[in-house]
Image (tube, rainbow, N blue to C red; front, side, top):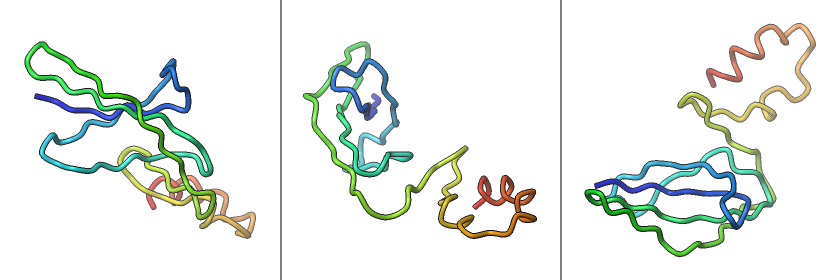
Length: 100
């Protein structure tokens, strides 16, 4: 038994991302979404060899706040931390941005 959430900025899901979901949970988190954007979302469940897909729902993201990203399982807000940083911090930028 498996369940996943597919989400895309295209209503035809020509390109999309997926997030595995625990079937016993009633919610999940989606990462790296753009601000002020519309996403199309569907659930895909599989039991044995049978796969079923839900109807498509629409999700709209807020237009305010920083874009929180998840890279290799680590969450960060790269633009908020590096705004107005001195040039000599650039060598540390990659390390901090990817390690929170």
